[in-house]
Length: 388
Image 1: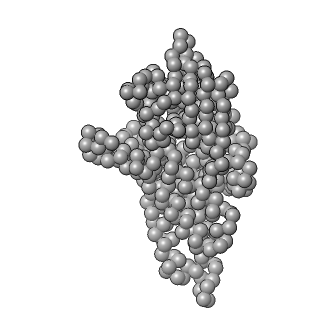
Image 2: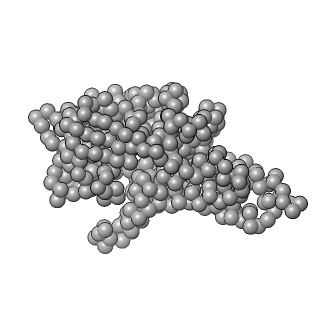
C-alpha cells in the first residue's frame, strides 16, 4: 500500500506520529467501531488512552497539557483515528476547536484546568451555536444572556449540538446585545455540564451515533463573569475564527474514511471474479474507483495545505472553506461507489454502510456547502461584492 505520508506537508517526525496513531487506531479503536454505533456510547476509556498518548489537541501549549506542535500534527492524528471510527474522532475535532477557543479567549484560572482535563482525555467539551430558529443564520441568535453584577443568566435552546448529552462542559453563544446588532451582539461563555437549570436531549441520528447530537435547554442557568470567552458582544466575531481550523480537520476526517473504503474496495475487486476475470479487470468497476482515488488524494492535499497555512500564520479561510464543502460530498460519493462495488455485501449492515451514514452528517452540520462557497467568493471578490 502506498504510504499516506509521501507529500511535502508531512516530514519524517509527522510521518512517525501518523504511524503511531495508526497502530493505536487499528488495535484499539477499530475493533469497537460497529458496537459503538449500536450502543451510541462514546468509550471514555479509549478517550483517556488517547490523552495519555498525547493524541488529543497536541497543538495546544505544553503548559496547558498539549505538546506545542503545529496543527499539521493534530491533522495527522485526527485522520488516523477517523479511519478507524469517524464518530470517535469527534474527540479530536472538538478538543482542537474548543481547546483553541479556551486557550485564546478564556480566563487562565478557568480555562487551564479544563484544558488539562481535555488533553488528558478526562473531559469532553461541546460547542453550542445552532438554534431551532435558524441553522446557517448563525449570527441571528435568540438565546438570551442577561448580564448580572457577577455574571450571566442564560435562557433559551440550542439544537443539533454534537455530544450534547455527553459533554462535560459547553461553549455557548448567546445574545447579549440587541437583535439588530447581529453578529456584534453575541457573547460566548463556558457552561459546566452540571450547571443548575441545564437539561439535555438526544436525537436518534442516521450516523455519527457514538458521539450523537441533541438539544440543550437553558432555564435561568447562571455562569460567573470569569467564564466569558473573549469580549462581551464580540464572541461571534472573535471566537468564530477558530472554525477555519476545524473545517480543515473535518476535511481530513471524512477523507480518511473514504481512503480506507477505497483500500478495501480495491482489494475486494482484485480478488472477486465474474465471467472468469477479477472485477477490477472491468473498466466499469475500476475506472470510477480510479476517479475517486485521484480526487480523494487531491482533496487531502488541500486540507493539509490549509493546516500548513495556519501553521505559517497565513490567511487560510478560503482554503478551509474549500475543504469543508468539497471533502464531505466527495467522501460520501466515494463511499457510495465503494458500497455498490461490494454489491449486497456492502448494502448489508456493516462497516461500509456505517461509513456512508457517518460522513453524510458533515454535508449538513458545521457549515453547509452554500455558506462555504459564500466564504470563498468573499475571499476572492471581496466582502462588499458578495454581501450575502
